[in-house]
Length: 431
Image 1: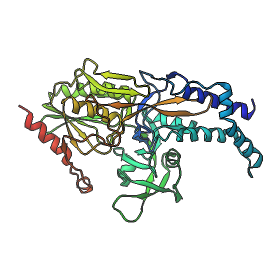
Image 2 (image 1 turned 180 degrees about the vertical axis):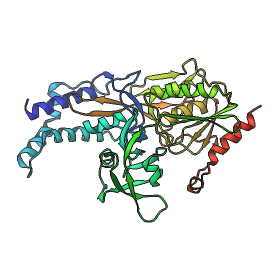
Image 3 (image 1 turned 90 degrees about the horizontal axis):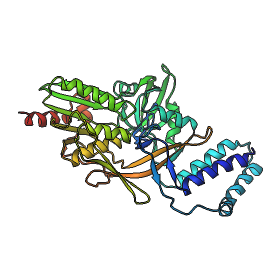
Image 4 (image 1 turned 135 degrees about the vertical axis):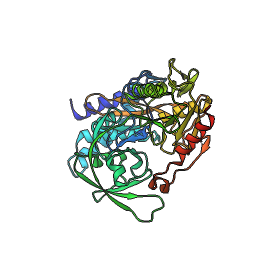
């Protein structure tokens, strides 16, 4: 097939995707790239995302989203007329541009430009390498520095380092912006590409130039990469008979891991439970429903509203293990997307108390749709989600019931006033 014919087939697929009725069959993800937010390693996403230097989700969803067309399907003649300037530009580049060009690069650039034209920071094109890295972020392991990042900012921004990761050990913090990597200026470079410069073989060193809020001059960090196992759930019993569960992401195994940890804690008869969602950049929507169902016995968890005006309500699934125990949820500015679904449902239903600071504010749902051949994937916002009381949190986040700051000085001194407040609240309600 000629270059034009090959690209025309891809354009035709995308025109059909945008204009025709159909199913989005990729994984339903809340958050971009976290973000749902990405990893320095393959979030926020998300949010994320947050996404771990890796992104917020990979494809496998229980419920594909359906969308009605926003315009009647174009006829072949209308489509031909519409794309006439495109093909004119294509020919001009091949005939006039001073250096050799690769049709593959032009095709990918065309798709990227089309996604950018939507004006949605969470809808974008991922080339095959970016898509592969994104798909790793919730499933397990990669080699990098271990941090959840936001790719939708001017510079790649760290949402939070992973526990005991090279990023945390080097002193990187939430909100740090990566200005340069190994001396190379990252100004104007897409965040997904910046991630590729940070990833690398275990044992190798990467030099990061960081802009940190409140610090007048850029900071310099040498970080030694290592094999990163993306954590999912951690639990322990705290003093006073209070159970503690921390969720790091909403990935493939999170709901099963959480259930095992809750069973272990219940065997120790806790008087109350702390669910720590701080710096959790999110992940799969269906995982967030299963997680919330461990704490909420019945009723709605969230609703999705689509572009055609239709709505889908997700309700709590029966059999939750912690639906009666006194509950406090810890949140902060790194709590995003799927984490906000859980926290918002717990808050709206009165099931527990939110303690900490205002959350990230990621209230949309993305589908990741693989393209034919080795074309990568498009990430498309297909819906906005709402809490059980109908709140849309994009840009605003969730306001905690009890506001407690955690300062740099607290962290440096090993103090955690947010956790202390959670313990205080639970101990005061215990019989």
